[in-house]
Length: 99
Image (cartoon, rainbow, N blue to C red; front, top):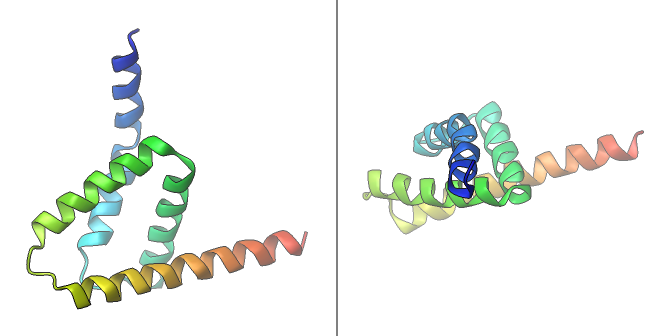
């Protein structure tokens, strides 16, 4: 199997995660469960370079699909994501300390 076949196979393995990420990113707002899931996906992408690359590309697609998004709206969404990631991180830290 060639390296390109391996890369393609790895990329295809992330298809459902990237699709879910796009669905969440295209929502006008996220409920708590959606924000938590978005945080989990982004945390996974931090640990997995190929997924991170695919998420970056998905962000470009999302931005293209929603050209009417203003800078203020994007900043609000980023702040919400940061809050979700921070909450997830704190919960994980507390769970680790409780062991």
